[in-house]
Amino acid sequence: MTVTLADVAARARVSPATVSRVLNGNYPVAAATRDRVLRAVDELDYVLNGPASSLAAATSDLVGILVNDIADPFFGIMAGAAQSEIGGQDPGGGAGPGRAGSQKLAVVCNTGGSPERELTYLTLLQRQRAAAVILTGGALEDPDHSAAMTAKLGRLVEAGTRVVLCGRPPLPEGEAAIAALAFDNRGGGRRLTEHLLALGHRTIGYVAGPLERTTTRHRLEGHRDALRAAGVPGADDGSGRGPLTLHGPYTRRSGYEATLELLRREPGLTALVAANDTVALGACAAVRDQGLRIPQDVSVAGFDDLPFSVDAVPALTTVRLPLQEAGARAGRLAMGTEAPPPGGIATIAAELMARASTAPPRS
Image 1 (cartoon, rainbow, N blue to C red):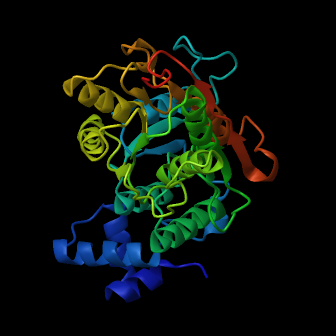
Image 2: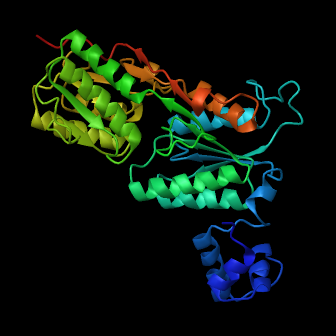
């Protein structure tokens, strides 16, 4: 049922005229009254300017790109590529041919990994009648947040907003109108560990990301699948908290501290897998600070193939995700210049990049 301005007024215990003044910002309203009205708007998920059906053909030129951390190259690369498509730029930074009339304003929304901020940004974009919304990176594995996100994105779609998930698994409810470009994190994690097993490693530490993120779980599942297939003891521990697995943020510091702890727990460790390349840099620093060599004493591998990975010393073995290509494709889907994938879901392959940071274990 469509929420009306009168519904908001009733919830806030004010007149419809007061609600209109607050939302239009064209007349002074007491701060307490304004807060009460905005709280009612949020609780009822009210969209300014009438029923959703009337908004389908009246979206704005705004496109929102939600990222967990704009300073992280993983998100920055995808957001930049999407923004180029949305703004009609060619790879050289100029206007693309024939695109002058198709540009829209892309706004990057940095959530800091906060589920509350993620929902707040979506509400603000909904009020602005955004033409499209792109959500990047893994999702939070929390039933209440998942339900709230599914409902919020469904309302955006009903209002005529295109919704694209980039590097994010499809919604549990499988909303057909939402395009999902999902990275094969599980397959990439499996291939990376298979590479280490093929080199002869059997005592492998794993520095995982935050426990509650889909990306963390899928990469760790791939790692455990490879260990299990090779008959490595302890591979069937499904808790995600085995003795050679530690969780933490996707940061260099997390990689450093977790690696020191893993080396303390298991001095015979011969290889380390990091949740991403940034974590891997911290792991490499910790290995060196313990007087160990890479890869002669300990092999180290990352994930994502961020630009600095090939320039690390030694060059970092990692799993390449085509972040630039995925972001550009998300931008085209948001603009409606590319047809959605069959069934609304496309799985983007992950490629093993074997480099000098991994080698057979010391004898």
